[in-house]
Amino acid sequence: QRRLTPIRIQSMKGSTPIVCLTAYTTPMARALDAHCDLLLVGDSVGMVLYGLPSTTSVTLDMMIAHGQAVMRGVSRACVIVDLPFGSYQESKEQAFRSAVRIMKETGCDGVKLEGGEEMVETIAFLTARGVPVCGHIGLMPQQVHTAGGYRSLGHNESEIARVRRDARAVGGSGAFAVVVEGMVEPLAREVTASIHAATIGIGASPACDGQILVAEDMLGVFTDFKPKFVKRYAGLAQTIEEAASAYADDVRNRRFPAKEHTFDVRSPQ
Ligand code: KIV
Ligand code: NA
Image (cartoon, rainbow, N blue to C red):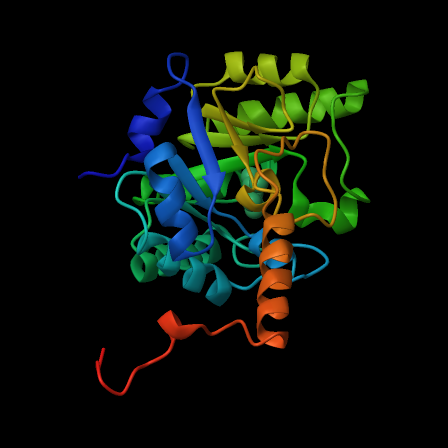
């Protein structure tokens, strides 16, 4: 196998920082593949590509379509696909059915699901049956409607206790990695030191075993809002706007298409 496996990703814990980004499409996967250890087909696709207000209306069919697109563009990175809201919380059997559909129909390397203690049985059920699972604790976007918004955790004793409990639970359930989202540094450090699964941080300090960002956030494509934890490595939204403006100007002034873009009767191409 040429692609990095979940086991290989876990083995990087404590030695090599694990580089992760999201990807939803073939061209993006092609551009990121050589530079990343893991590409996540995240349910953030709903907000980033579809303009949905949260991730909760994303469907299993959407995740499979984007998983297939990403798989067509990778040759090195491990590819993990998010189980969307409603496709796994009902029972471990429902989770297994959804995970198997994703793995069979996309050929990806594993699935990710959000949840702490309440997901331990499900994660153990899946991993015992051949489905590599990445957990996701801390800020869990699929629980935005009960959590009352997106905010960082670890600011009071009850938040700290909950994250600790969830980390221990998910870390001991067989997950090869855990996304650790939106928490203060000491808590992320403690979680990382206390479990065997690799921690992949987002808004969770440099103390994690790896880092992940939404590619469109760090590329400056998605500019609706910029969370504190995002670092912008490019400003593609502006580049796109400038290109569209130049194109519009060319068309309106009949500068495009030029001779080199126009088929010639004498030299068929
Ligand atoms: O959906 C997503 O993109 C995610 C990551 C940002 C961790 O879950
Ligand atoms: Na997600």
